[in-house]
Image (cartoon, rainbow, N blue to C red; front, side, top):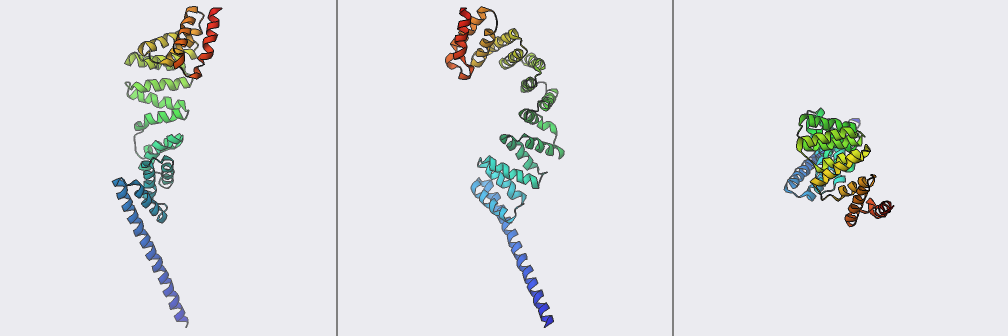
Length: 287
């Protein structure tokens, strides 16, 4: 009797193992099928079907890299970027050194203001062998948007040291320096930009703004005039010129400012407060 009970127990145990094993095998086969069909659907452009198949596969294998990552890709293709980011983040938690995942995060994280996420993704790729120089421009932009201007300046200067003909880097570097309150150094790079590439309306406008910060109104006036000589269509620059003219004691300059305000009154946004500035300046001139 005892031996019979032992045999029954062994039989039940073996049967249970076979059932479990058979179930796992079927699940694995199903996961492989779903992955294969999902990839084919994704390649053919049937993103909705691919998403459905990958989600079914994720129910079987909840930590599968391909299911997680490809669901993110599907959401990205469907322009549901917040959901794409959720799946890319989850994939990176499980597979932190995955290059594809980190590259996706570099592009998506900044859209939602998570600059550290993108910076960390770049750091991971660099630690895996990528040359950091490939990411200098992106790092400069990310640190600028993160308000870490010192780091942004570091990368802009690296860019210029490597390529002194990078037109945009001069302007970006000067803007960053201005944000740090280093207006004189900012103007030095704007002048270097002009010296290398020739007169630039944008460079002169930025120099003028820096001179206002430095309380050098006459230099600001000259730079605004140089900017407008190159691009007279910029109404905000005309209004800024009028502002610096109105602040000077010379009555001829005040009258010129008034003429500019009146000329562009209808085309100027309300936040410039021309409706208040014009009568105030008229009263000042009439005294």
